[in-house]
Length: 238
Image 1 (spheres, rainbow, N blue to C red):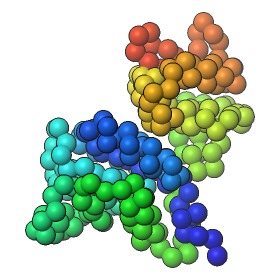
Image 2: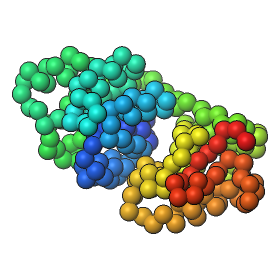
Image 3: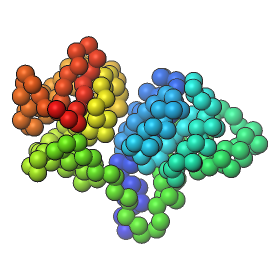
Image 4: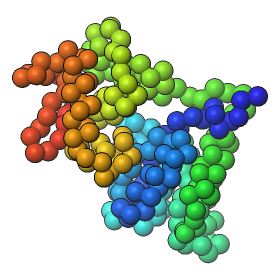
């Protein structure tokens, strides 16, 4: 029988953590265990991410700059059933009871090891998938004539399938999920490559390949546009 972890391959994790050092460490640990990782450092942004592009599971720090993490947890439960693992420095029993009653699926008290986090996430995901059930399909993305299926990992433009490398697909899917938003190269490196210290030129090389495969005009691209000094935007309309 296939291992249940295999059934949860490439589960997407939204890490909500305001400390950049811890955030980078969590990205490294979780990608090393096969998760697709997105991050934010604010509660309101986490709620927007959960609404617009739901992850498979959330790792929620309680010490956020804009909202108390407990309030964020309650708000998440008001809009979504996504599993939430709370990372907290608060270890007294009454606080843990409050978290569980507010809708947390599990918790870890800081500091914790990367292995412990990965094991807890896998356990929560196993509990959230009924025995024998297939993992839920991730939403198909439609941007004008682009159709991107994250589950099947296929991309079509005006009905024509694009032959993309793994990284090209990940980049296109990420930009499509954030259509009409200007995304910095640094953010792409952090959330698509999960390697924030790689040279920005890496993104440009893959963008160039994407444009070529999509038949974009160099002087007037239809979809992938560079916003000078800011970043990249995948536009939904001409």
